[in-house]
Image 1 (spheres, rainbow, N blue to C red):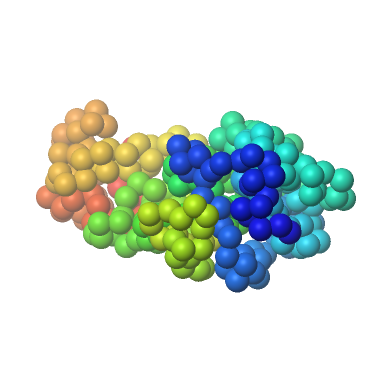
Image 2: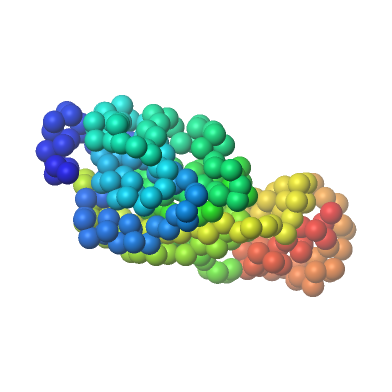
Length: 275
């Protein structure tokens, strides 16, 4: 493959800071990512943000059908030239936050595996969308994220990094950081370091339907006012104060504790007691 500078010059492409376009250009890191991304036989691999095709080139050799989603027309043209006629690769010009993934999901028991190097501004909405809209059909999600976000995904209760995204990720999946990726590995160079993470989707979830919705309403209420005592932050749920105190008593939670100090299991227990 041509150097990233030569390729961009040929297509008159200039990375746009407003679009968060920072491209991984370190071959050694790309090789490490290639080694850690697993896609079982029968699964479909979907790359988010094909960019100039460096990761695409490696993913295409994994002996799995590959779907590559890229919204930028010049980057898409680069992908078309290299992979447009390749067997087993489906190039899709679309916004991943608007694209329905269901048509790309293989018949059960096979699933969809997601991988990609995405703009930082997409991280929270994309992870939230994938986890909440496609449970049961995704196997794993591999993404390049800001190092700070990687810490949030695996954070412990009571820490600064712990928040609503932590609980969403840990409810639906088992998150872990796979690689640290310094800013120098990207072109153009971002101001922060990154990490490559894995979210291994769980096969089943403890809550269903309205119970699950109420749990995430509880999470939102807590972290919209994370410094407040739990008895105060729960007022936004619209429950009578005596019912809130009754639920806290049932679960053995001190009303004066802050919600950010409670783990996933305890918060689910509280959500069910509030019902």
